[in-house]
Image (cartoon, rainbow, N blue to C red):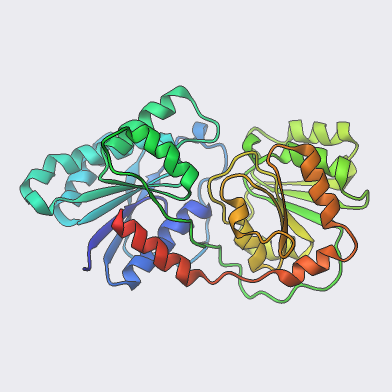
Length: 373
């Protein structure tokens, strides 16, 4: 049965994996015959709560044509009005949750939906909360209360891992439906044509993404000092929340400052091929994780991965075939993994084992589970 679906979430000009996921999901649902729309933001977060760049000039994929940008964090009346409008036309509304900061707006949308539900009776609009993060990696007490209030008002909840489903289940409480688990499908930035990687070792590693404490870059610096050969260097590329001062000082204390380059600021898609071409592997030293695209992104560019077993990171790494795994927040084990990676012949062997991901089966499964939620 074809449905009328609205996704509420970021879309271009917002950047990063969240916007790409919302947009790709809209394309996939529309391709399956559902009348699909995106209800996006003109202002998603206060600048004080998101210190990085929020938008980009150029799309990182094909924009979805039926997209509105009417929501703003500072305009509560618009939240309620959006809910009332969606209740008149939609079968399903999907609220994409990245941060508890979004919850007040979503509760406003739900209030608008509820105010109009009675007129549609059995055909009322259903609401699913799609949780990229059930709770933040670095959370406050109020975050639990906000997310609990949102999840308990929804008709369904979708998470990207069993661990996240367990967390959501605890917030939902007894007597409610269980969260649906749908592994995150690939939604990679369009970086243009890709050529086969040049043979040989670069003696260089790459960390890519927003730099926050839970990502474990400090653990990586300590492991680099302990376990990687002395001629191996590292680039840390991304937005540094809180600045790079502490990590720069740590690299200096560890004696690896001359081996580490901090490339600060959001990395646009056109710069990614050059960063990947210069590296032997991407390193994901996360202390905690939900789901990440970075394993697939590295593999798409021919790179093996050194990753921790945090969250779902290890699900798409074949240890000894296209990557090396280690325990999270464990300097000694990450140092061991780096030393193992640079054993003679291993970088070339793991590079040869890398395969690009086939996205379609992941998306077919994902949309099935979303619609069943």
